[in-house]
Length: 328
Ligand code: PBG
Image (tube, rainbow, N blue to C red):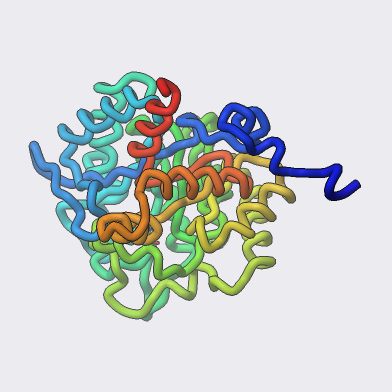
């Protein structure tokens, strides 16, 4: 049957009709808010390349987390800016490290908020690479031992979920066995399974001071041209025990959100990264696009593509928008 019997415009005539047939509904339950924590007291420093996002000292972070909790956002993911970076990123695994302190403070001061931690060394090493560097290369197997220590130290501090973002081979099974050995068998692993060597991480590296001091990350993060390989990465992480799969970045990689969801039918998180945030922010500050509508469209479309969860610097804006819509 076709036109004139079929007229798809019939169901688009007014907002209530459109609501009734809407296939994808964004919810505050889907959102994860990334947060940067820095040393000091009473510090809240705006990140130049990410207007509206800040580096918080631990005390300020707890206040921010209380606000996030009130907005109904279920989870945050933490990134640390250590007071001191060194060759092997030792602050990343210290019980008094900045993220470990932050986890304990949030767990004490904010009830119920899910605390996820990024497990990776680029924020803690003076060379800015994601692990153990030997002869100018990141040593995969040596880095696995470091990742195990970091994941266990986060869990010991009270993290609810650990999220390895280093892209070493075998890290999910290494982390799983280390957690299990320390009786953290119930701590889920949210794996950055398909993480691409993307230029969209620029503002994040500005925020965390984590740009590589030599070379680049292309020998461990994925080539943006490869889709089948991304599915192999996901498959390996699933076999190794990952509980949630991250695809990162999100917007230019929606095909992989879709393919991963179709093939693996497990919880998928899209990481709407810093550069994606900053592009929307900059264009809206110039008056070239409408920020709120753009955010809503973008996040809804990531869900339509198959994301169950969205890690996004827009989480607070989106939560407020969803709240306003509910109250008409
Ligand atoms: C750590 C890490 C990065 C991001 C998340 N975890 C930076 C990188 O890989 O260089 C980027 C997130 C963003 O751009 O918002 N490895």
